[in-house]
Length: 227
Image: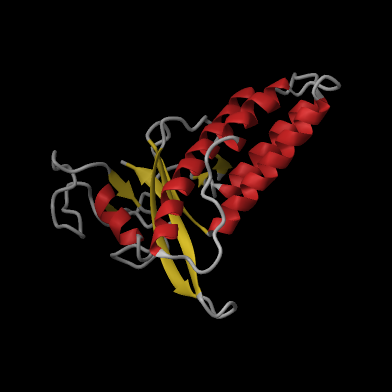
């Protein structure tokens, strides 16, 4: 296994929300499921995050941005400032008092999806700028810190050395959810799950809104290939 190393550009993101009763808090807690699809890498993955998780990431990026601004002139921080400026200035769904209403959840669904898109672009830019020959230790460390933070926040998967070889469903067979052919021209991309089963993108994303398991074998599925 090795981490993804190519810049992730032109990604698309699908978001949904699910509320569950928290035994710890005694009320409903909202989890946002965000599925990232990268056509360049032919990889998809999903993450489940609470609003507070991504709010924390934004706070950390704001802290790094202010620190870089403070040191501007004394140290080489221009690239760090330029990278972080669009993200920290981007709109972010505000905190709300009380429980999550339908309107609050909808507002956050849209806002968090856009924020994750900004994070994906930031991570890609960090990857392109990482240069071992850079003589600015501070800038290199800042870029590495941002990259590590985003890798964890975005749940970026490791890439398998090869695709599953024990596929139980051939791409020539129908999608087990809609029972239509995988290569039907009217349908979209095909998602391959870790277990090897394959489904239409829209079919499996709708399934993932309730559970992240394979509809066929119930194996947990949070990442895979676009075939």
